[in-house]
Image (cartoon, rainbow, N blue to C red; front, side, top):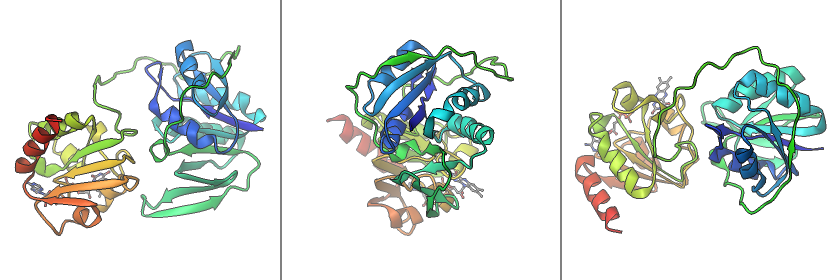
Length: 303
Ligand code: FAD
């Protein structure tokens, strides 16, 4: 029995999280990728290494419909997986309840067919667990895995099934942005409350642009109205695992650190050499962000 992965779609196109979940799930076996969306998304999914077959189903955006779709396919699979994203967190518990399975969520490492590592206590500890159930419902923290390579040409099979859904889709209100997706970006520049204003955050954005980075913020900065809610990183925000996190004017409170533990390198820019973020940073620039950021951005733009 193989692995069924739910493809994550973003406005009808395959989201970057899908390639990461596919790369993770490929360690468990050959993957059938369920794409409940347009054919072009299925074609993109078919190119991912590790995908044996794409199952193209009727476009379904609501969690109960997706859970019903997966439940219908479940008997053929030992592992059913999705990203630990807002979609995955909405769909997979519904599926697990339907199948009467305890899901294993937020996996950051696969140690065997039924052995996984996941963060617990808001990221303050890592738990290794063995899932003794016959079938496994899993969510993966996409940012913890490298994306699957392209170049594959898996066949696409159309699933002719009507999707039962008790909910009705009314509208989606989206924020348009050309900034990379925070949850999967390789570089993230994060700003804290000491940036001082929404105008001040333009300095963070300029540094981010010069590096092709996504922008994050602390809860204090979001609460102060300096940055939008969907930039919040941490225990109650997004969990990120970039190659590089640049923390600008961020103290490094436990709740913020919970969101950046997967970062491979951290650079802290802070006036306080004793700030907790400085203690865990690989490189610290001690000084005023209003002096350092314009210089840093100007140097990077010369490249
Ligand atoms: P501060 O802690 O005030 O730090 C500001 C830093 O900027 C200091 O280190 C200071 O030295 C430095 N600084 C000041 N001026 C300058 C300058 N000119 N140049 C350079 N450096 C300067 N927080 C999150 O971020 N994410 C979460 O998900 C989250 N969830 C929470 C959940 C709960 C239940 C609770 C209780 C709190 C949560 N918090 C979260 C809030 C968290 O505890 C901190 O309050 C918050 O992270 C602090 O944000 P900050 O680093 O911007 O501000």
